[in-house]
Length: 181
Image 1 (spheres, rainbow, N blue to C red):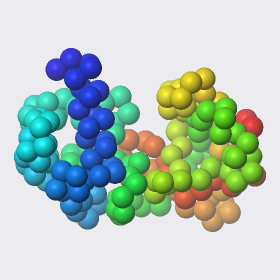
Image 2: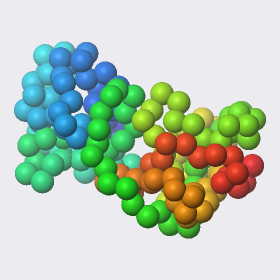
Image 3: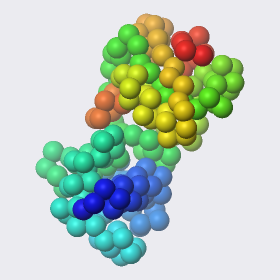
Image 4: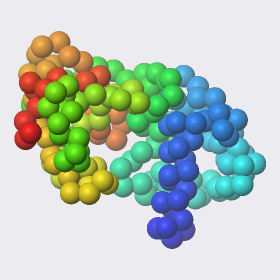
């Protein structure tokens, strides 16, 4: 499968596994899981056939590791970024001292006022390093990289979660914990 095809299918899967599973007739199970066989059948029925080999390539080759198979490979889920109601069954974890967030310059005035908000998602997404945050923020042009005083937030009682692909999740980041503004 070429890169263009893999990107197209990855976006298709992200859209349906994170935002609109009902459009394929799918229901996210506990933990956000969907049986692989049901997903493949639904994709084919809706004009986007994906084979098991292609699906495995998409999961393994995705640079952001957006998807994961369960231990026996019979279910798949998006790691994070859902706008639909789902409990990913993540366990609170101790974050590193600093985390990072890439954003567009146009978002800075609002961030200065209210901090980072989850908006339509379940959590604010934070990166473990500045380079990852730069790649995430670059989706909308030249990024601004913010530092997040994660250890200080945690000490103040704010819970963090680490998804299976290393993205850190938190309900919100108040402005006083942000640097680089």
